[in-house]
Image (cartoon, rainbow, N blue to C red; front, side, top):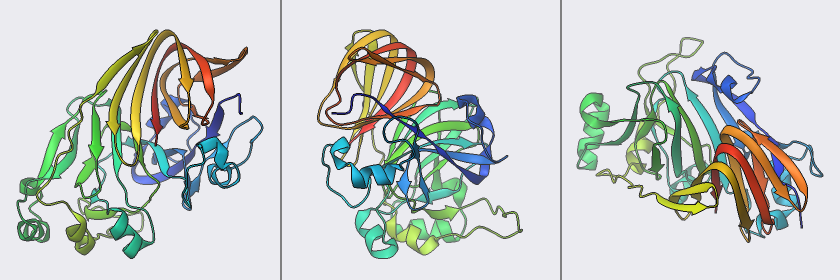
Length: 314
C-alpha cells in the first residue's frame, strides 16, 4: 500500500485566448498567452509527470499502465480523466463536444463531457451555456446565417459557481474567467464560431460546422447542478456532480479533518491556501497550485490547514 500522496508537475499549453494569470498559482509559465495548465493529463497531446517520491519521473500514462493497483484496478485502455486550469484572457471559441460513440467513429477518441468550477472572474464576466434553437433546422439556419446574438445563451458567472457541461452542449468560456475543468480524457473539440479571429499567420481558425450540427443537443438541455454539503471535522465537502464519468467535490478546509480514502483513487488540486497531509506519522506539505493523487486504498489520513481543494474521482 502506498503511504504517500503522489504529486504531479503540470504541463502548459499556449492558446490564442490565453494570458499570464496562471502565474498566481506559482507556476513559471512558458508563454505570454498561456491558456491551459494540464494538471492531471495522460493524453497523446500532453502528459503530466510525477514530482518526487518513488515514482518520480513517470508520466501519469505510464503510472496507469504499470501500476493499475494505484487506481483500484479500474479497466480501460487509457486514464479516464483530464484536469485543467484555464486562463481565459480573451473569449474562447464557441464549441461543442461529441459523445463517446460519435467520437469513437469519427475521431478514434473518447467523447468529452466536462464540468467547470469558477475559481475567479472579472466583474460582469459571462459564459455561453446552451442555445435558443428549438429544432435542428433552426439551429443550422442560425449558424449558417451567423445569428449568434439570437442563438447563443449567455450566463453571468461569479467565483464559486459550478457548471456541468455534458457532450452535445454548446458552450464557451468568456473573457476574464479562471476555471478548473474536470473532463473525460479527450482533446476533441468542434468549433462553431470563433469571432472571425485570425492566428499568428493571419489565417482564420478552422471551424467544424457539419460535425457541430450533428452532435449538438437540440433543443438545449441545461444540466442542473444541485450541490450537496457535508461537514467532516473542520472541512466542508460540497459535492457538485456525480455522473457516469466523474464525481467532483470541493473541500473547504479551515482547521483539521480526519478522512479515509478507500476503493477510489482521488485527484486533488489546491486552488487556494496551504496545509499538510499527515499519514502514519509522516507529513506532506501542500500549497496553492499543487496537484496530487491519493491512490485507491490509501486509507486514513489527516488534512490540516486553511485551503480550498477540488477533488475528482470516478
